[in-house]
Image 1: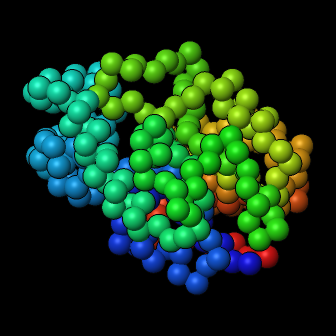
Image 2: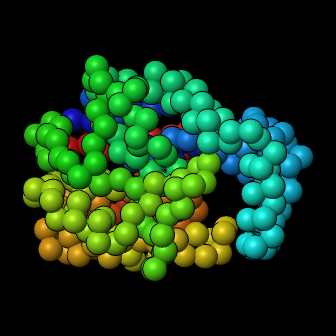
Amino acid sequence: MRVHVVSDVHGNVEDLKRAGDGADALVVLGDLVDFVDYHDHEKGILGAVFGPEKVGHFAELRRNRRGAEMAGYLRSLWDSLPDPAAVVRQAVREQYAELFAAMPVPTYATAGNVDAPSLWPEFTGDGIHALDGQSVEIGGLRFGFVGGALLPPGGTLRHDLPWVPNLRSDQEYDALLEGLDEVDVLCTHVPPQVPELVYDVVARRAERGSRGVLERVRRDRPRWSLFGHVHQPLSRRTRIGPTECVNVGHFKQSGQPYVLRW
């Protein structure tokens, strides 16, 4: 069997069209949406709605970690629209229409934090499977999927904003993990909470990994733990006991799937 795995697609439709070439199946580990394109400010949802100059200013504030000023500036952008939530939903739907159409059959996908999984039923089916807290057999191995990312400790989601990231509490996330049956391949958007897997060397900060994923890997010892989320990790792979833990790569930039063979 040969399965190709991608994560952090962020709008890379052209390479996604070829991601399944030569594979028996494609696995997608989330972040399909290109919300803010930090490399090309004309692209992404913010670029399409507000233009490159305003996105460039937003990106500069984020790079310099001027959080309060960035939040205020983003609010001012949304306030300039009569119905910002409707604008975002339409832009996301347009991206999803292209992205899901680019996926081969069969594809098994779970959502990332920059996704709107409530919209996925409009685009899945006919061999494109959306999985979250579920497992499926592929080529004789059991693959388990848990999507989304983790809220910061004590954090809550603001559902009154035009864009609400796909984030979960640790308790909700761990409950989905525990609901999986025994799997050979654990597929998540976020990595296990291992320092070298969660640290982004370009952003110079650690993302939130999952202690629940780490505990599940230690307990069940699957063949592989596959994930994305961290675009430039300190280490792309490590072993935990017999389990090969692999960041499958920042597909938007690499355009190359991770190849799994057995």
